[in-house]
Image 1: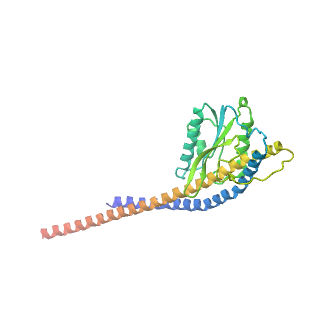
Image 2: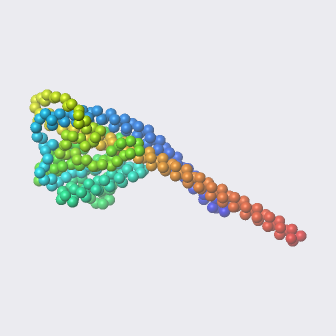
Image 3: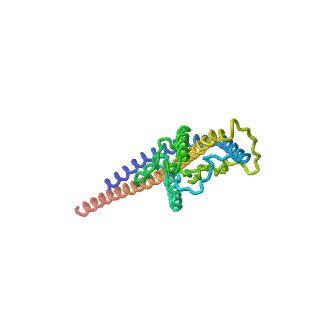
Length: 301
């Protein structure tokens, strides 16, 4: 009995140590997710203004541009997968990777070649473990993305998209990420990034249907303006996706660590009760032995 009680008490100490770690990680995630949400909100006005400008341009001109021109037949598609660098975030990584697998399967069924770009160490590990090829990978900033990283990703995607098919270029590009709706709701989603659709697929950034678009004067020419603005628009969309994914990851991590802390509390209560039961059984056995010995002495006398 004594050995069993010591085992339970050791387990209680082990779970208490684990609980301290999960509680600390929960508090860290809770503090970071507030800043991540603020960054998501702060990026919205710029993306919205850029979307309005491009919407006005599409309304008041018939200018064609390689980044907005639809291909008659798409033979090669690019897929950007945005996941996290670490685990301990519940189903966050598994959900976005599952969404990417569905998109990849759909594109392959359409007889399209794939060029995959990975963001986040979890996405890299997923592809390396399955020995799949990918064009380029970025990592180390999933919970605190930088605009420079978004710019680098955007430039690589635009460069490949502007290449000819024979040179390994892509003819459409999709991005898979986790959209941050609230602290409770984060949903993985896939959207087409290139060719650019002026009406943004993200309802929060799209201009309202009844909104009066401003009149712009383009100098030196519409084509030159598009050459400057459209790559920035792609970078802005990547930046928005990275910020939303970071906020989603931190929110998922906070929930996962809170759940782990609650489970640790339940385990501590269970092991404490079992240790008390073992102690009570040990005391009862000792009393029984004493009483039995006293009875034996009394009978002997």
